[in-house]
Amino acid sequence: MREDRSDVLIVGGGIAGIATAIDLLDGDKSVLLLDRDRESAFGGLARESFGGMFFVDSPEQRRQGIRDSTDLARRDWMSFAEFGADDHWPRAWADAYVQRCTADVYRWVRGFGVRFLPVVNWVERGEFRPGNSVPRFHVAWGTGKGIAETLIAALLGHKNAGRLTIRFNRRVERLLTRGGRIEGVAGVDETTGAPFEAHAEHIVVAAGGINGDLGRVRQNWHRDWGNPPAELLNGSHRFADGRLHDAVAASGGALTHLDRMWNYAAGVHHPRPRKQNHGLSLVPPRSALWLNWRGERIGPQPLVSGFDTRRLVTDICAQERQYSWQIMNMKIALKELAVSGAEHNPSIREKRRLGFLRDILFGNRWLVQEMLTHCRDFVTATTLPELVIKMNALQGDQAVQLDRVTDAVTQYDATIARGASLMNDEQLRRIGALRQYRGDRIRLCEFQPISAANALPLIAVREFIISRKSLGGIMTDLRSRVLDAAGRPIEGLYAVGEAAGFGGGGVHGLRALEGTFLGGCVLSGRIAAAAIDDRTSFLDG
Image 1 (cartoon, rainbow, N blue to C red):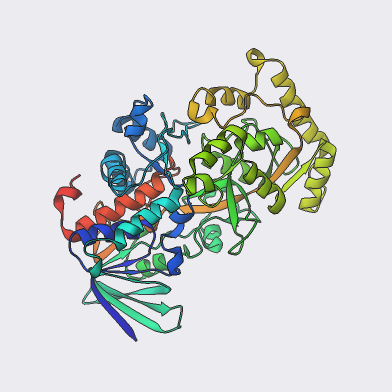
Image 2 (image 1 turned 90 degrees about the vertical axis):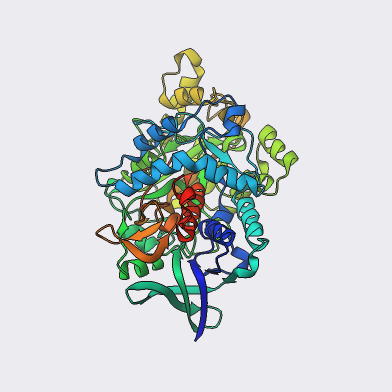
């Protein structure tokens, strides 16, 4: 059996594990990093992400004249999270994040060369309760792939890289204990099938959440959402299966809030799937009509993205059939349709300025054509009757009713035709409000009728709930130490990133303000490294 030894052992090669390793090397620690994936996938789910990060009072905000503060951000966070009375550590981590994200995450990644788009995005504004009062979603130039590759380069090029060992294709299955202390891990080398053990004074769990295992997602489905949908898509990492959660629990660690997860409402089947139930998360066009499985407009509060993602999921899960349709036309699709993640944003991912400007000015024709041609959830037609026939053919029944779709489209278009002063429709009011901010205006149509002859063809998209991120996880204190059920630290054991619910076992509460996932990975990883290195100045903020 192969055995490795080091000062610190990190399980998981995503952004949380990488950030932890970089700071540990700064402190001259020897580091062994074990990752289950292949070397070419080093960086985890961050490589596939859009690369948005939540910062408070950043230089980009200031250049736009956005006045932000930690007090305002904390107020927004606490509103959206709806923490319970017993959520001591999640609340403490929320306070720490809003206080430290710009100093200890933004400046840190900028120091390695990560840059952000000049216009800050404004998402999760809040609907029935306040969300982001101001724009805070900073998109990395290069997407999450660029962030991952920049930090990997910093890790591999570190002056103490000789003290770093990385082993890929290692499936860790359990923690090893000696004398009442966690002192190693055991598992299998998936390239050879051979067992291995690795030993260290400190173990850091950075292995992601549970949302890549749809069975676990269904088992932990939140009561607000009723029963899990019959069809659920997977937008998480294929190895985010909760295996390390089980190992930590078996060693006495506390798991909390596993029913809190960040799923999305507009998932479609990946045109070129790489795993079972592989899905893509659309950025739902705001000018599209969101309909239920029959073709009725979901309401009475219409579904519009960018305000409260959890509410979108809740309302769709409340339907008799828990999938939905969005109806739009080509003009709306070209202007507004987007897919979250690096894969389908090549101009930003590859840092092609001209391509990015072309997509903004003339519409993302490549993406629309890709979805229309290769995604099975898209259908198109020149008339509503023809479109409904194709929608029903896609679903394999006659559930979508032409009269209901026609009524929804006709009433919406008629409201637009009355003029801006008479648009008594909540979706149109929101579009008007969204267009006041230039970050939204450049990607949002101005009151576009669905059936306009000059905007055809019509497009219908069948959308499913897609599993994405775990908001709960391993309970940790503000030193990223794993806690037992009595709240006592387990000696030698730490958890960071999504494995720890991005800190404390649930730093986001019920909802995320977005951009706090990558940032939470970095901050919790850096805090774990400081605790192991006993750097009290960093731990004290």
